[in-house]
Image 1 (cartoon, rainbow, N blue to C red):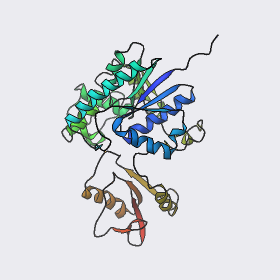
Image 2: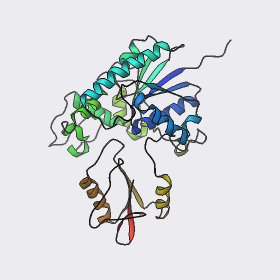
Image 3: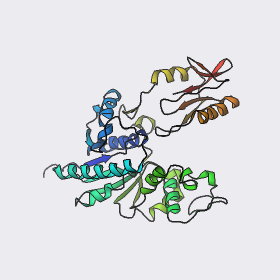
Image 4: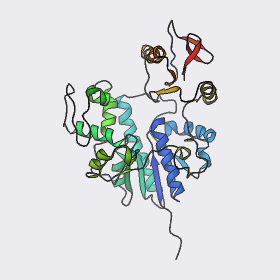
Length: 335
């Protein structure tokens, strides 16, 4: 008998750092199981990803990076949340992905796609035999909360919100878009779109693990083909099954690795709090100052990661070569 053919899987991430990381890590796990993996990136981020992959070591993997045309140039701002942007993005991505699948021989067995790209399911259905696996970067608790809200099962936030398989929740325990979904309407619609066709997907993959949320996971499994596959972080911090897997391998931003390590090494073990608002959010200066002020007043050391191009300034926060100081000691480092 001949050798069994390898499975072929396409993995398609939404083009921002916090979504690329877990799907890239998932791709490494598939590779370790003798699966052929093609990692799809949007055309506007493809070249940037390849440049970072070379320096980060991701190109050392037997992993193909293939661009999917999104209709935008490489320098298009990743913070664009206009309705026109998302409409054009969906149209171009759907067309380009379908053309790629049609050109492949053999056809892929499945497409694992970011849940923020729900229209990929429609593309898969146009190609018989191609399974659709939606990959959710957030936990089942977050997923279930959005699903209950979108079903209209709660609208008021003055009292405790009681949902199946969860403890009572206060309004400020919930995602901000739920009680203020006009804060950024396009982003609210993007997040909500993750759940428009969950009843039809073949696999509901979640970047979580069973012991983290036992009750809500069981509630989800009773309704959908949910499978926890997380946490999707480098193997060195988990089971160490992937040799040399110490980082994700791609960073879309210029990481200040050595500077951060030097600053951290100068502080006692376990004494620094890490604060990050992600790679998409852009905070105002007064908001950043407020965050820094809280930690400084309480005397806590912190390393704070913000989107590039922002800086802190205040009469009592003094910039030094090792971070931000209050008095003589550097309490905060901002990157």
